[in-house]
Length: 492
Image (cartoon, rainbow, N blue to C red; front, top):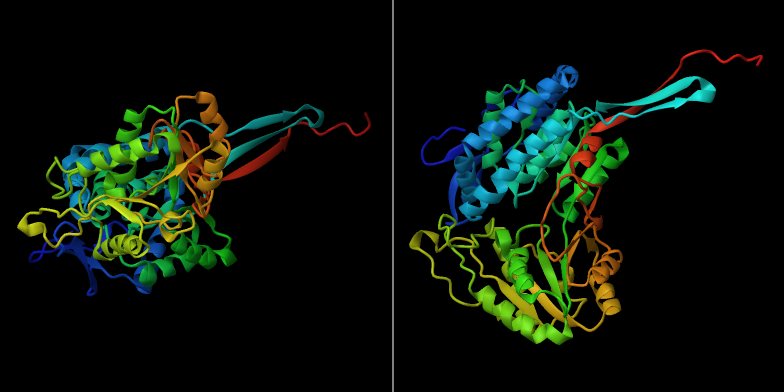
């Protein structure tokens, strides 16, 4: 990354070096609305260069001893940890999130991603079975798939990219990464770290630009054997269609319209404080954020009153001010999308209980993409606001009477990523959790993550699971070998 004039320049990283271009996109600082980056606008030729590089490096990297691969990943983690503050500031600058959040959540998780996969892969997952009647034994072995394409989103940029990259590398695949064009900065910084850690040229290739112009070429290239994507359901469908005739391995982690179910017997104080985080952390730009809250009728009025009071206390503004809980939305386009949903609520006469208060921002931030958290009530279950993923600080609150009703209503969604339950009755929690059509249920908590258990959605929220075991399996092919020790005596 070079710095001519006032702009940082982000070029593609292929075969261990930067490739200059004469075509660049503007990169905006969400907190000011001003251009601060120039990002290479890649196309077909850049896609081919990156895949060529990864293809050539595969033979050597796939045969590299796993202990050496592990040492390189651990070195990458150490180097990022040494520059944690720098990476956190860059993530905040590029994405709009508060710097304190990047420092305490995003970058520590990046470091953990490399370390957990670097060590977990050293534990053999192969199996062996002896067939006495055949005097033979069969065993399995794991092998890398080939060139992997990793497409990551803009909301948790390096966090989610490395959750794909670490398992892909440790299992011996070479990779082409395509980060979101809205958040390219920390991915570019990662390339320099990988060089310093001794990752061989061609093993990691980073292509920047738009999905329409370069992403489509990457997905459709037959030399790409495996695709891991996190992003919108609409984009996933395009990837699926482009891959279907080539039988690529696919992992698709998509959106959600996540429900929280709050029962009368909950710990209301804990529920309220956790709900603020689950609805508005990272400006609500997390696929796991709660978007629909169902509150049992006996405590509905109390819950709404307290929830609105606490939400109004949330500070929104300069991402570098640690007293601000929320920063800016990622882009002007996304700002428009989120505010359009608020206007839709007004048009449909839905109650907007908070969010209209004037934001007081420093002069340099008056053109930033800041939105206060909004709480809506009075919408029908089939309304756009209850059915479509907003992916911002807008949450719908409604009431329910009994279990059967709320289970049916919570499941009334084309998505099925996660849900939260709030009740002190553990039997009720187990009973309802089994009936919710989602990949993850949190009870009396939110986003408590153990990477050793699978993560992923059902319905339109995705295909496949991610996690330590699941990701290591996804980025490998399992081979079965059967060996007969002694020929059977055919006369016996």
